[in-house]
Image (cartoon, rainbow, N blue to C red; front, side, top):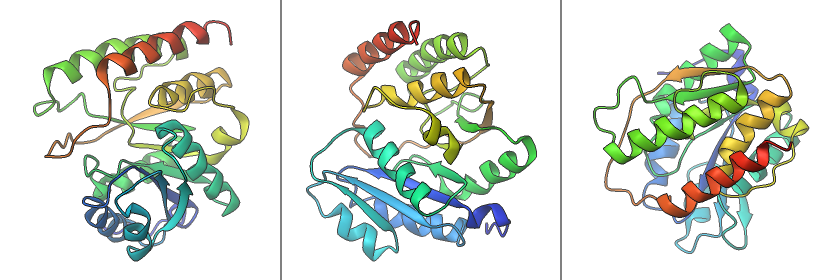
Length: 230
C-alpha cells in the first residue's frame, strides 16, 4: 500500500534498534514500500551486530549511540533528528517486525482526520495471538495511564505510534527506557495534547523481546508515582 499524502513527506519514520540486524532489512523494505516519500531514521542504540551498517544499506539515516541507552533515549534521539530535518510528525515502530509497516498510512490518515497530537496503536481489539501475561499487563498499565492522562488509552504500552514533533519540542523526559513511552503520553496530555488510538494487528514471531517484565513493571509504577508531582 503506497500513501501519496503530503503528510508522508513531512513525516519521518523513527526505528529504535538494538541488535536488530536480522529483522531490520524486512522492516525497512516494508516501510519504503508503504511510505516511499517518508525519510527513515534508525537509531542504533549501542548494537554490536552491525545494525547501523544494515540500516544504511537499507536507505536509512542512522543516529548512533555508542552504548545502549534504552528505548526512551533512542526515541528522543530519533525525534531530535526528525526536528533537525524539519519534519512535522514522527511515526515510531519497532525494529523486530512486531509492527506491520503497511499500517503506517492508517496513522497518517487518522492524523489528518483527527488532528491528534499523539496517535497510538491499539492491539486490544484483536488480541488472539497476544500472550495472556501481556494482555493482563497492558490492561493494568493502560488503566493507570488513562487515569493519569484523563483520556481513554486502550494499549498504552504499544510502541507503534505517530506523534507531532512539537510534542518532543515541549516536553523533557526524565526516563530513558520503556517507561519513557508512558511518560510521553502523560506529559503530552498534561500540556493539553489529544491522544487517539488506531487499531493495529498483533504480530508475534521468533524475535526475543528486550522487555524485562518485573524490572520494567517496577519502573512503570515508579513513573506513575513520580508523575503525581509533575
